[in-house]
Image 1 (tube, rainbow, N blue to C red):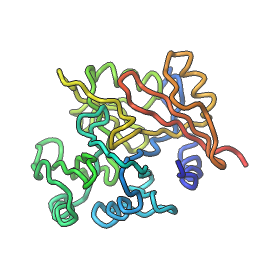
Image 2: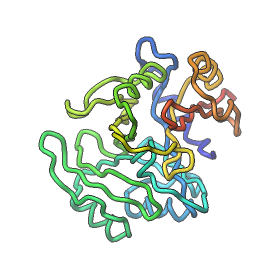
Image 3: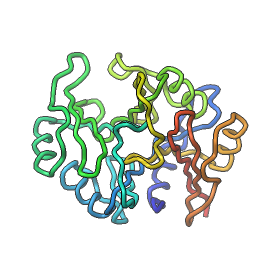
Length: 259
């Protein structure tokens, strides 16, 4: 975890952000996802060239707006489809034009662009390493758009995140239940009778939230019975920890310590 330089701007931007009444932990913003690939630098270059990301200060880091994506090296990447973190969503002003870029870059076109009346144009692609990405044309929210979970009980999952980590309850385009953390939506779909894998060893390894104090957040979540995967620790000025939701989603909590 080397995304040290990304924290300060988030703290300044979201330090006064309100959080849901009664939430166990105050979250300031959605911060990042980790994606597992064999060659992090190569994957980062691909995302910049074909998906329109901005390069970060380290070769394994990219941004979509203020949302960080960090690529983590793994020799045996497993697809995100079939995992509890099914896919991420990216939004573009002209989706039809971008689909040509995706295809030229070697992305697998899972679902061609279609217009969903009352929602937006959308399609699905898969990057060369197995990460499923919903691409949408939502003019109200361009860039990193959402994270979509697949879980046995979507309503219970969204309630858990609201109770534990706040977020603004709402309906995407008035139709899809979700929680909004800053500009990023957290959505949940039913897995039906399918068994979904925990996120730890899959392409989309985790989601991450910026919090005012990692140690306090972990202490409170422990009192709520939330499983801690990695106790609070520091890299430079960054303090972070990992917890796990009831469905096996790895959640990073992160903040920058005072110098």
